[in-house]
Image 1 (tube, one colour):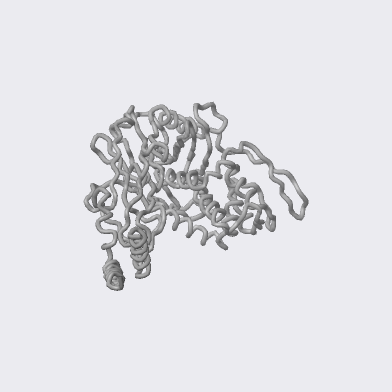
Image 2 (tube, rainbow, N blue to C red; image 1 turned 120 degrees about the vertical axis):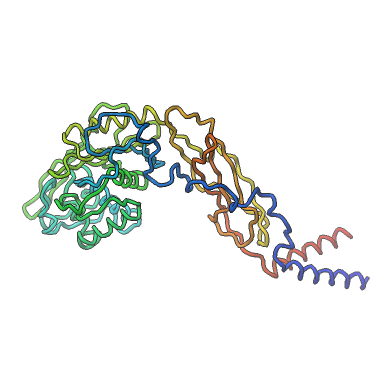
Length: 434
């Protein structure tokens, strides 16, 4: 009897020693996955349809001829960033008040980060009051809420409200403009440079492109969809309260596309015009869950910018289909085995929904999906860590991919983890022997 106990103890010590060597306990558990990611073909970035936001999916020869009279134009699908139509899309032109799209991006980023709230008070400086062009006639020292300032910027294209908000957020307009250019660079807007926050400047160094305007419009409506609560306002009053008393002031939306008869819902976004820039527009719309952006720059006519934007949007909704693949349509994922971890298995998940813009009657049934997982998964594993990808192919051509990531963390197993596992095995074996 004593000899048997000594044999079990020696066996226990041996197994504890062996189990502390990584990989022994769980052996080749990771061989249940498919193939190494390093061997996979190249696919686009996660969830991207195109190589970069703003890439064109129709060649110049394939584009329809709409007879656009504006100097530059772009039609973009918002969720993918795919450009459906482009005319001189990279020509640098003065953007006028569609500059304020970037101003709004920084305002809504500050709101989302909790640095400001809609109820915060904003005081108008003498400099902000001095702005000409489109304005709501704020007085020096006048206090308005952030939300009221947003309405003034979005609905009435107010230069004075834009500068007041720039100063409120950054201390000065110049610092705010530096942040605008920093954000533009981060978005890949290589054809853009801002010199003010409202587009009033006549400087040749204040410029953008139709493609870049579409990119920043996409950033605003997809990352901060609450902006549409304001861009769809047609008319609204604000109250001026100064040392002269209080008075009502009417805001009227400069985006006349909101009142035009369309087959889609107009959701915004921003107009602009100066003598140099002529007439500009970034128009956004929704239909059947698909968002489109139509940018018109340097139109010769006040009304033409709206009708030509409508033409582009009509084309987009008539000829495009947005293929979406989410949790309800994708294959469920099995747990992955982990080598050397405190847990033997780990939950995995898809990182996001996939979308792909189809044109000219492409058949969604032709889309093939291929799951590729890491060949060997070793602890530690962090939640959100990429462990594979779901790749999409149509007619033999990669059209995009979505990351597959760890749904939880698994720490590396230590000596006492192995000791406990072996001890439990020893106890169970002893019980089984009676």
